[in-house]
Length: 240
Image (tube, one colour):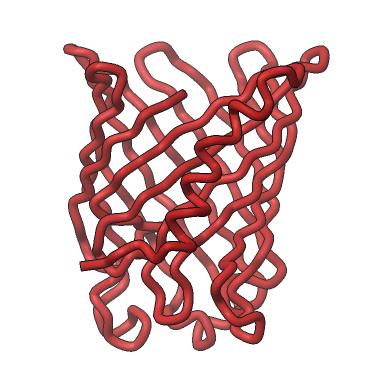
């Protein structure tokens, strides 16, 4: 069973305490804390199929018809040479009629990993969304010139659908495709990932259950691991 190392836990706790420091800043700070049975990134487990603790904060302010934002999100991971992931995000979002848009970046950092491993990377990200009432659709693209581990150009395309259900439930569907320039360096060929899930708000908590999978075989997944296989993930999230 994975245990959080002290440095990982300290960084995640520090993220959750930042709102108290910024109460007088114009705009709004929102955050969340999550306990999940597995941390799957684009269908592949980052926590070795073990539980993970995650904390995120975002600061945003409305400037006319647009809203610039800056955020940070952290999760425990279970790599041989890294135990925490920090994602720094920033960009601008807005709405035109019923269409929402978001243009920004994500900087993925693994503080405990050696720099020679080239784990850290940056993506530019774009999203478009439309709420049909009965369902909300979001499509997006993330592009990196030097993806995880120094694996070269990478493009991730995704589509997400959220459908309100009776009893306060929300069903979610996701499909994505990850293409990578240097597949041998990354440890897997280009692949599809998908998920189906449901969430419900209970006593101020968001409870989630999802099925996650990819089209990668065990042989194709990082030299024969089960990290890319089908899994059911349960999570509980507190927003603040």
